[in-house]
Structure formats: C-alpha cells, structure tokens
Image (cartoon, rainbow, N blue to C red; front, side, top):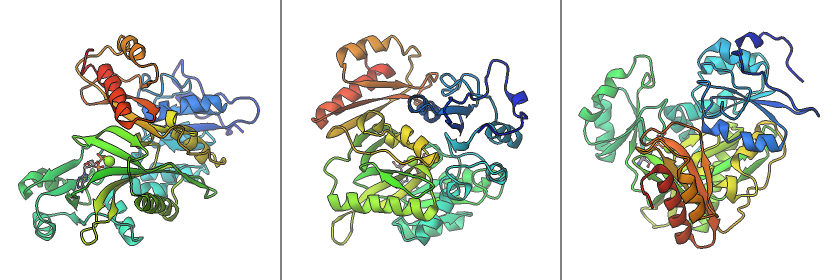
Amino acid sequence: MPRPGGRARGRYPRGVTSPQRAPGGFPVVGIVGGGQLARMCAAPAAELAISLSVLAEAPDAAAAQVIPSAPVGDHTDLDAVLAFARECDVVTFDHEHVPSDVLAALVAEGIPVHPTPEALRFAQDKLAMRERLTEIGVACPAWARARTADEVEAFASRVGWPVVAKTPRGGYDGKGVRVVGSVAEVRDWLEAVGTEGPLADGLLLEEKVDFVRELAVLIARSPSNQAAAWPVVETVQTDGICTEVLAPAPDLDPTLAAVATEAGLRIAEQLGVTGVFAVEMFEVRDAGSGAAAYVVNELAMRPHNSGHWSMDGAVTGQFEQHLRAVLDLPLGAPTPREPHTVMANVLGGDYPELYPAYRHVMARDPGVKVHLYGKGVRPGRKIGHVNVSGTDLAQLRERAGHAADYLAGVITE
Ligand SMILES: Nc1ncnc2c1ncn2[C@@H]1O[C@H](COP(=O)(O)OP(=O)(O)O)[C@@H](O)[C@H]1O
Ligand SMILES: [Mg+2]
C-alpha cells in the first residue's frame, strides 16, 4: 500500500514522477544511489512488475535514465532520504555510503531497510569488518589498526614490508588501497587520523597476501533466512580494479569451493546480511600442507561486479535475486546456464563515442551480450561490461576481451 502522507511530493523536481505502483498489489523498491547497480535492477523489476524508485545523485545518473521515479537528493541528507523512502515499501542501496544516523532514522520510521544498518556497518568500515570476521573465526590476512607511525612500524616488523594500507571507509576500485614500503608513504593518511573523515579511527593495515588468484563468493539471503549461492568465481584485478570475472572459477579445488561457499553463507547469517552479498577472497596455499585455502579480503552488501556474469550466465541473475531477497520473496535458482561465463568490464578510455562501436562488436560476435551503463566516459571508469557463455574458456576470454576492448576504444579492429 502507498505510505500515507504526501510530504515527499514537494521534493520531487518537476518532470520527475513519484513511483507508480503496478495494479495487482505490487510493491515499490527504493534504491538509494543512482549508479549502474540500481540501473541494472530495472530490467528484472520490469519483468516482475515491481516498481523502482531511485534517489539519484543527478538527473542524468545511470539509473535515473531508465527509472522514471528518480528524485535527485543527497544520500547524506536525512530529510531527502526520508522523503524518498516514505514512498517505498522497502529501501535498499546502490552503494554502502549512507550514514548510520540516516539509516537509523529510516528504521525508526518503520521502513524496512535491507541490508539492515547493523549488517551494513561491516561493509561500510573495513576495520569493523576485520574485527567482526576475526571474532567469528573467518580466515583473514594478518591485520592491525594503526593510528601512529610507531604502530605502522610495529605491524611491519611483525609481517614484513611491504604492507597494504587501506582507508577503512569510502574506498572503491582500489582507491583507498596502497601497497607501502615505508611509513613515509602513509604519512598523509596518518595526519588525517582523528580528524573527521574516512581515516578518523585509524588506518587498516594488512599483510601483503601472496595469493594464487582472487575469488568471490556471491550469496543472496532473505529476511526469512533463505539463502542461495552462485558458484565461486575468479576475479581478475588490474591496478586494483576488476577487469574480468570467470564463472565458475576454473579448476577450483572442490573442497575449497565448498569451504569458501560455507564461509560466505556463515558470514551472511552471523552478520544478518539481507539482499545480495559478496565476499571477496584471496586463494592461497597453506604454508604447511600446500592445500588450497582462502582468506577474506572484503565484504560488499549489494549486487557486485563479481556477479554481473549471472545476468546472462545463470538461471537467476543477481539483480533479480536482490529484488527477490529484499522483498522476502522465495529466491531463484543460481544455477549456471552454461559450463563457463566470462564477464569483461568496459573501462573508459580516451574515446567518448560508444554507440558507433556496437556495429563492429555485434557483427563480429552475435553471442556477446553488451551492457552499458549510460555513464560518461572517463579514463579507468567502469562504464559497462560484456558477458559471453559457452564451453571453451580460452575462446570465451578472447571474445569477451575483444568486445570490451573494442567498446573502450583500446583496439580498433
Ligand atoms: N592484503 C592484501 N594483499 C594483497 N593484495 C591486496 C590486499 N588487499 C587488497 N589487495 C588488492 O587490492 C585490490 C583492492 O582492494 P580492496 O580492499 O578490495 O579495495 P576496494 O574497496 O577498492 O575494492 C584487491 O582486489 C587486491 O587485488
Ligand atoms: Mg574490493
């Protein structure tokens, strides 16, 4: 049912409509943040007659281009978020940056929020995440909180230089992650400790993990505690940014696959995560036995780049699953449709014109599925991805890589 009170109406700019509910008792799902993750919920929402409303950063935000109800507002502005949320049956997120007092206000109004603020905290703050995972016995890299140069030195003398330093809050795509060989290289971050901002409570330091490869476990969990896990995938990062995902992770030790999935499900349950949830992991070799093992890198409580393959490669894609989960509907099958799916990200290059590339990409390979986000091209920015499924992994990687590179303008034939 629509929430009473038209207080929100005045906040909708001219030309932007309030969410329109489909006849037949269908709900409105509100998404805070108008990036590509919100945008990619639009297609499955339309199929299921679920209405979306997006609190967008700008009228031309990625999601605002395709979702008619997209009031513009700041996710840190309590009044804007409340006015937006009052017209929705459930609120979820495109990113993890909504401040806890704003989240608390939504909960206080009785608006269902998924993931809940209690759970979201562990995806918002990497120090809180490390503390909690350590508490529940999940394997992590050696880590410490550092507020001073002495604490950085002490940690480095324990694990050896270089160490990985992270800003606990606000980082993404490798921004906020530094591999450092001396205290001098984090001096500026140490100076920000204790002041307001992402470094207020100190830096997160981690040992530099000598990993075999990076994996991700993607799970959906509903408020009724139903969970579904997609197969563990391999993610390839270049300069800290994900460029390719192989689903499932090729030649993954079946025991590690089971153990990593179990860890993901356990974390989701213990932290009370609702919605789609990603656990980024490093695959390592046990120092003693040489057996394949994992340590957790970080958590994301939303649809995730490591799950984009599922849009075309699984019976239920992550965006549909996220909607089902936050609405507490039964979850769909996460089963792959083909033996392999390769996802390649399209990163912005120097060339701003994207549409002309369609002719070549589509003609060369009709099996490639293109997803672009309606975002302006900036070098290194994620502006889209492609998926391709089949049986020959090496060939799929070539096909996906070619399409992504051509769209980005990296190659011209
Ligand atoms: N402790 C570590 N050891 C080795 N590499 C790391 C470590 N932490 C992060 N990285 C590398 O940096 C990338 C980005 O780090 P991450 O913590 O996931 O930040 P972001 O929030 O930007 O995704 C990881 O995907 C991995 O490639
Ligand atoms: Mg990451």
